[in-house]
Image 1 (cartoon, rainbow, N blue to C red):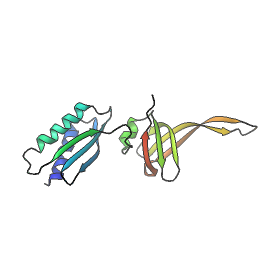
Image 2 (cartoon, one colour; image 1 turned 90 degrees about the horizontal axis):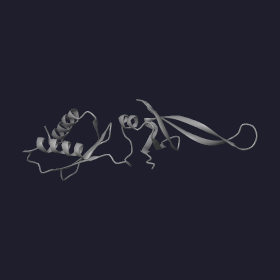
Image 3 (spheres, rainbow, N blue to C red; image 1 turned 135 degrees about the horizontal axis):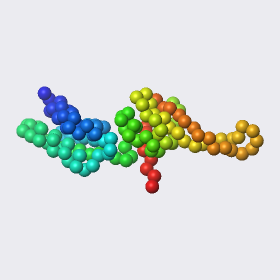
Image 4 (tube, rainbow, N blue to C red; image 1 turned 180 degrees about the horizontal axis):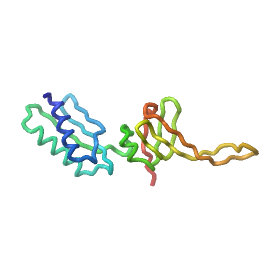
Length: 155
């Protein structure tokens, strides 16, 4: 088993012990710096990162390869990558850049295995007469059409 395979195996075991956590990114630098980015159904706290770091460090003890480990949570501005992230952010405002339809900002109202549904209000001309009327727009966007989706934080 190669060093990278051992790290992936250990990380899988660590996440099995913490099923509320899931992997967003795993990266190996040329100098064997292991970077792990996690997210969780209820967020990720510092203790979660410490626990995964210790689990990896203990499991890799005795390896003849010099390495360093960095375990972090996905930041607020980190683009969403997994369906599980979309599902945990239902009800929040997203800014979505699509490949074919342009950019949208709206409330994430649904997320399933095929795509995400955004809802927002728009001002459009009245059908009869002058002026505008506020209408609710809804758009289902396939994950394959999403270039980038980021949660908008409002205070």
